Length: 485
Image (cartoon, rainbow, N blue to C red; front, side, top):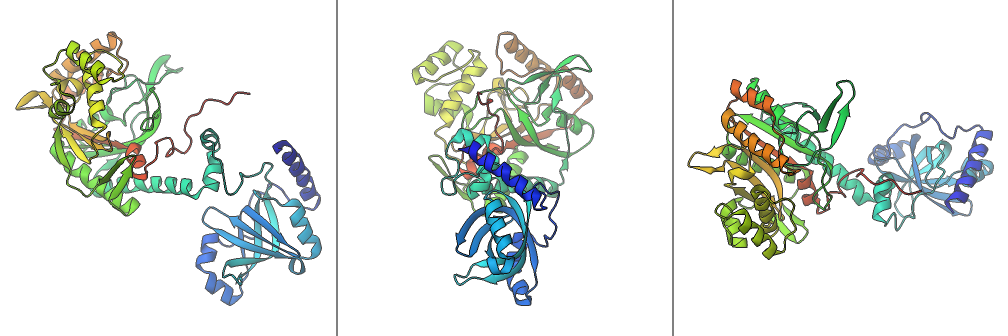
């Protein structure tokens, strides 16, 4: 069917050319207003009988005897247009009906008026083709219902589905609010490398590539420049942040993708307590300014960001929900508990087993809450608590059963950091793909001295929670396997 339509429209291209039209114009000839501007200024323009020009994609065509109504959308808004034989001439009117289709980009010039039904409409006196479409748009009322096709043809999904379009407008606002908030607090926006010799700042399996000029294997970053931004603290910057893309070569789920956007800030002379206050303020600002509300629903969880953000203890919460003290338990006992709970797991190091049990427990927590007092073993970059060295000054924001932010007082003791990196190196050598790569040059930086610092990261997972959509739905063009021929 599509092949037949395509062949018919290719013939229409020849008809347009023969009539002196350019079916793939470089720009409109008589566009004076975006459609939203024309609608906003409707009374002023129509009362003055001033003629205007609009341009956009034809979204519908309805013929009624000697007249035709159509709708045109230019990205800002849509407007109804009215074409009539005695205004255009019978020849031009028939030419339009024969050679213009739904999906074409065109421009129209004429006067604005109000129909009997009260719809703002442009009476067309002149028209021109801008881009001739060869394939039809999806059927108006159903759009693209197959998820695979929606992701592959996201441009059509956005065009036909106002809800999809709204998601990405909100997402742009989400990051704009975060950026403006941090700048208002005196943070400097920076850019750090996305290609790294070692991937610091998180525990994840990285993507690997090759740098031809240096003949060197490098990795796509798994954090938004954590170890680089901490170098900037040593350099004398007091407050920095970056919002950028992150890459993790891991599985997909409603809350995980291999490529996504995160934000991270670093604040010298501050600790995790300061970071918690700023992060809570940031999240509330994002909720109010982006969505105009504080109450949200994510899956089965209903939460209010204006509620009191209580603190829960990592070790105590696991013991309460799973019945095991993860600090006192051996690897054998942890593994037995995992089997008892029926949890899938990867890796049998104590670090990985503890993390697996915690992720099982957190699914039941609605939040927002601060998770605190994490074990040192699962926090290789966080400063130990002075009164309890086996725990660290770290906080995670838990919302809807998942992590929605992570921060801590940054470890700036080079000797302690080196020992923790050595532990991570042993995990790597034992086959743990998610263990953190040691960065020995970072340890050297710490020996030169880094001030007390708090770091915090948040990402588009928070946004997906706020719009109650899987993260794949909130990604413009998610990675897809090539379609088979």
